[in-house]
Length: 440
Image 1 (cartoon, rainbow, N blue to C red):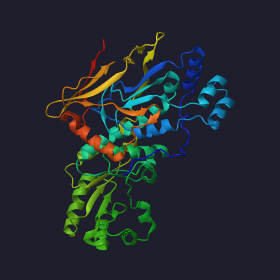
Image 2: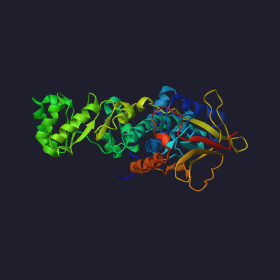
Image 3: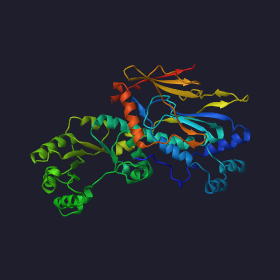
Image 4: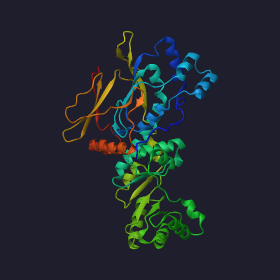
């Protein structure tokens, strides 16, 4: 898979934002503080309830969005006609380019409470405008990837296919397929995800195809003649046992797969496996679908299932459709020109001031022990630890774009590095603790 690049004619992302981002900018321009050097941080205060770890996703999409964050004549004209901001602010926006630096956790990495997933250094005016679009992308994509990771870990070596397009917004469907692929899903049903990001796509037929034909036999024969004997036949439109018999009769032992989409999937998988073996089709695989989540997948571990199709529960984050990430100012230039830490102290929503550095503390036998965050200075590597922040944008130019394959490989390495408790699906605390250096 080649490294994706942002389309040259990508539509502007500048209005994928909240009204108050622009009114803050206007007020900061008026006070003279808009061009103060500032450090913003995108981070989670906690993991979703009961989760042991999270997965970073959406980095590539965020970089595309930053490149496309331009106020063209259309955007400026709209803001002027609606009276959103004054002329001085419109003049600034018309020339807006992000010229700062961004570091972040690379895509596919695991994260924990207070992980500084993105550190944005620039002027206040340049950095504050990116808040909403970055949070929108990260909160959605990381939620999907985090759920997908739990599902693929529960599935083991059995492949998972993303099939949630019809259960979410059409744009979210494409982003979900991409995020799921980062976290180990092997394919998607969504063709736009294949076109835009190179995610492998797959699919054969739905119940309507069977119902269209006069008999199930006619439907199966038409599908096999068109798609080959290695196709997947959907066998639960009428009677499953009869459909399996017809499928093997028509395609022979070379029949690729049968799909079961309803009923007690574990019991049915055992029955179908036995029937396929009796019919001389031991290599025909069994794929199951029907509102699966990580718990259902884990419950099918002992069943003779060869693959899972996951839809609704994946695209809603399996109960956690957002990660609760926030984007906060953590340092700014003072009147003397020095960078000083600033922090929000309100009850239950604190932030920790200062520019952050992050390192994954790893034991001598290669198991992650802690997320160590240095405040104002890098954390010292004791010999086998991993620095987590990588450059994403330098002087306004994207430098951190990479392929989805690289993100997939990173995710597997990072997940396999976690202690065994991370695999547990029962509710619990984060798999490793977060430690701060330099925080009082």
